[in-house]
Image 1 (cartoon, rainbow, N blue to C red):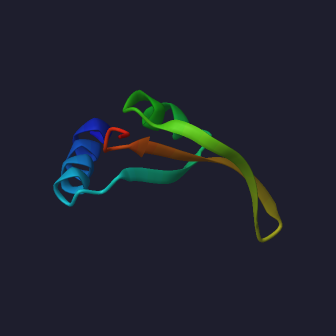
Image 2: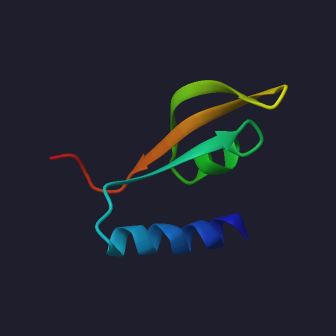
Length: 66
C-alpha cells in the first residue's frame, strides 16, 4: 500500500517539475522511505511536550543534477 501511494505522490511531483521530495521520517518509517529512494540528510531529536523523539530529515532528488 505504501509503495502504491508513494508512486502517486512521486508522479504528481514529477508532473509539477518538483526538484525533490522530502520528509521528516520517524525511526519506524525510515526503512520504507529508504526503499523508495530516499536518503538521510540529517538525524534529529525533537521535543513534543515532555517527550523526545528521534527522526530523520530525508530527501529524494527528482531531477538529475546538471
